Image 1 (spheres, rainbow, N blue to C red):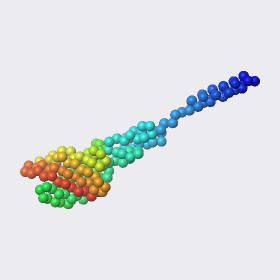
Image 2 (cartoon, rainbow, N blue to C red):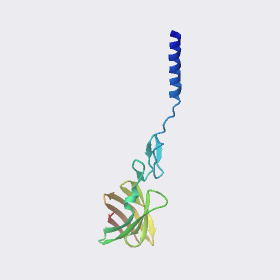
Image 3 (spheres, helix red, strand yellow):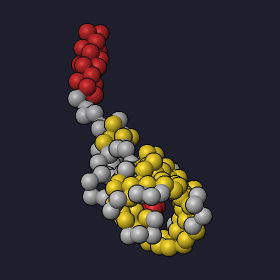
Image 4 (cartoon, one colour):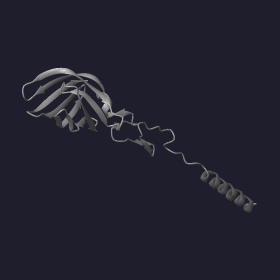
Length: 163
């Protein structure tokens, strides 16, 4: 009888081991849906540059998109208020196009460097070149600095954009 109890306990332990070792592991990414090409790693989204948030749902440039009033002050004394339009680029989630910069209908391409800062690419338009452009987002305001080089002038302008 003692041997029978021992065999019963041994059989029970062996069965418990076999059945518990056959359980499937739960993938921590099964219920996680990352957005904007984010990749789930161990249950957490790894977001691509230009996005953030738990599921990568925040696109940094989106706060800038639309038509906005810009007040421009240039070091040569010109002060203007006009509208600029910021639209998403189709080539990169970090890039956007600023239309009507310098109030002359010119478009420039900007790239988000983090959630609150961007740079403006060197762009040549009809003999004028925009260089060393950059911007900062602070709440509902973006501040943009551009340098415009023309055939007879160079000026640096600061734009305050209400978002």
